[in-house]
Image (tube, rainbow, N blue to C red; front, side, top):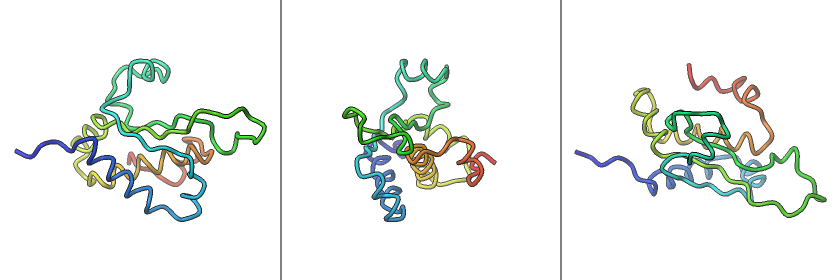
Length: 130
């Protein structure tokens, strides 16, 4: 039996997804941090009004670039969180995408939020759930 992909495995896939983005997009993410955790913590789930941690595969935590100002106080770093267990659960449930495709989708989706896109903006070009 093959062990489930680890946090380190997902970190490598997330880094690969990030490096595959166009140079201009990567340049706008110069201070963005990619992190992989087992699952979202209770505080995050409560803030998002999500009961099942398997419903949250990723999260952008920060101030979108479209809302930042040079006069703002020094903020905490912007972070894209990927949640390993939820990603693996969706990957197995879907059965029609590779793990790399799914991780890439989550990374791109959350980076789109960093760039100031809404879920509706993203859905207009990425109908992933269909």
